[in-house]
Amino acid sequence: MQWIKKGLIFCPDGKSSWNQRGYAHVVCADTSYADKIRLYYSARDEKGRCQASFIDLDPNNLSNILYVHPEPILDLGVPGTFDDCGIMPTWFMQHGEEKWLYYIGWTVRNTIPYHNALGLASSTDGIHFTKKFTGPIISTTATEPYFNGSACFLFDDGKYKAWYLNCTHWLEDQGLMEPCYHIKYAESTDGISWERKGQVAIDYRDEVEGGISRPSVIIENGIYKMWFSARAVTDYRTNRDRSYRIYYAESKDGIHWTRFDEQVGIDVSENPLDWDHTMIEYPLVIDHKGKKIMFYNGNHFGQTGVGYAEME
Image 1 (tube, rainbow, N blue to C red):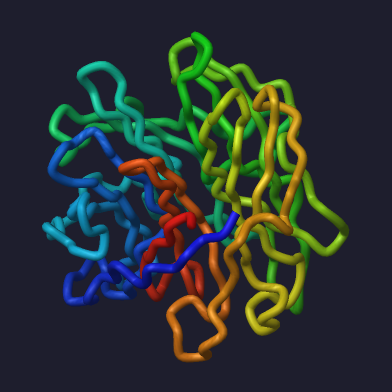
Image 2: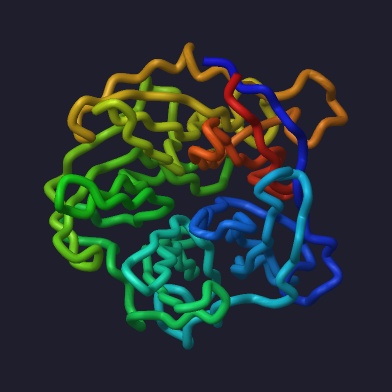
């Protein structure tokens, strides 16, 4: 496969209190409208907390922004809950008359910088969302004791299926605690209560790889196809060759996967001034007007915004 980059779409202007640090990362899309694609994203406020909102794109020209929503669509959780320090959308799903938004909740810890879990909110208009629960739907368990993050949720073959980030351990790196995580698989009958058997979908490629995140799965001709991002364990802040990249895998059952990293067909830009020169990450792949579109983030985990590419 070969992806043709179409450029940067959007980055917040930083003029509002809830997006003063920019960012437009880990996007998910509502493609149910005829006249727009609604792209949910998270920005960061003056305290570095993620806040969720959306933009509407012209379906005939994805570089054309039709509307920028001026405020967050969900409130941070009350003190002590799993999302009191940040909310980051991770997957959109049309659920009957409801629009479901799965999101990552952030809170801080003492011995490590943060903790994540997955929550669920719903809406009838795609603008005004209400949290279905005060607590998370996917969080730590006796056998998954660390945290869970970015995920993909699909309804397929009469059941809900999830591919989700699962932290396996933390490492100390140059005085900082850094998490290591891969992608696991789970199933559900209702999209809320999940049966988790510890099934690893995408594991670490080697001892250097430390962060596998943001799965995006489509099913095509009976084959599950996943795009995801991964980083190295150490020095990813300063070493360009060890920062996030986007990779690809396939599966016949959605559970057992084979990586085809060399076939992904997209990499960082060569121009050092480009928005995606040092890293590319957090892909979202959709089918749109007979073509595959990949929305993705660039430098510094999406601080430079979200852009897209089209499969040739």
